Amino acid sequence: MKKIALSVFLGAAALAYTASGASASTLSDVKAKGFVQCGVNSALLGFSQPDASGNYAGFDVDLCKAVAAAVFGDVTKVKYTPLSAKDRFTALQSGEIDLLSRNTTWTINRDTALGLNFRPVTYYDGQGFMVRKELNVKSALELSGAAVCVQSGTTTELNLADYFKTNNLQYNPVVFDKLEEVNAAYDSGRCDVYTTDQSGLYALRLTLKNPDDNVVLPEIISKEPLGPAVRQGDDQWFDIISWTAYALINAEEFGITQKNVDEMKSSANPDIKRFLGVEQGSTIGTDLGLTNDWAYNVIKGVGNYGEVFDRNIGAGSPLKIQRGLNALWNKGGIQYAPPIR
Image (cartoon, rainbow, N blue to C red):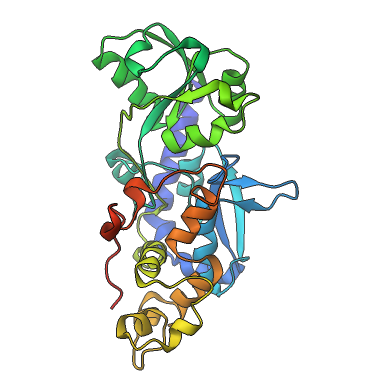
C-alpha cells in the first residue's frame, strides 16, 4: 500500500509541475543559475561515462555540452545528474533536471502520458541480444529456455516479452534496476543472454572480463529512436534543444567542422552565413532567445554530428560502430535536419 501511495503522490506531483512549473521559462531559470542540469546515464561506454575525476564524456553528454554552448557560449556550463532507467522520467518531471539526454527511446506513452516532449532522434537504434560464444547460438530464435539479463523500467523489458511471446519461446527474465547490476550479473554467469539496444551491447561487451568470449547476435527486434526529452509546456526550451541537435546535423551537411568553423564564417554561401550568425539582419538566433552566433558556438564547442559520432561511438572510438541509419540522408542514412532559414 505504501508503494501505491508513493506512486500516486509522485504522479500527482509530476502533473502539478507540468501544469504550473513548466509554464515558467526554463531558459530563464537556466540562465539565472548559470548552467544546464542534464540527466545522463551513470556508466555507458561511448554514450555517458565519468572518468576517475568525475568528468563525463560521451555521445549523449556532447548534446548536453552543445546546449550549454548554444545558451552560454561555453560547453563547461553543464552539471550532470546520473540517472537509472527507472528514475530518469521522475527527475525530468519534477524539475530536478532541465534536459534528459540518456539513450532514451521515444514512444507514444512517454510522449503523452508522462508529460514529456521528444525530438529529434539523435541515434537510430534497435534492440539486440548478446550471448557467450560457447553456447554456439547463431540466432535469437535459438534462445528458448534461456535466462535473460534485462534492466527494469525500459522498453527493452517490454520488447523482450513481446518477442518471446510472438515466437512461442520460453525464457527466464533476470531483472535489475541499475545498469551496473545487469552488467555484473551477465559477466558472472547468472544469465545466458544480455538484451538491450544494440549500441549498448557493443559498449557493454568491451567492459566484460573477457569481451572476445561474447558475441552480439544479428537480429534487431525493435525500433529504438533515441534522443533528448524535455518537459511539456515550454515551447521555447523545446525548440532550443531541438535546433541545437539539428545544428549538429546541418553543420555536417555543410562541411562545417570544429576546426574550420572560423574560416567558414567568410563563406559566400548564404545558408552557411545565416547558420553561423554572420548574415546581416538575421534574427534566427534571437528568435530562439539566444544570440545569433548560437550555432557557431555549438560547432566550435563540440563539432558537427559526424565528429560527435565518430569520436564517441564510431570509427575513432573503441566501439567502432558504423554509421548505418545514422549517416546523413544524402549519404545512405536517414539523419535529416530541417533548414535553418
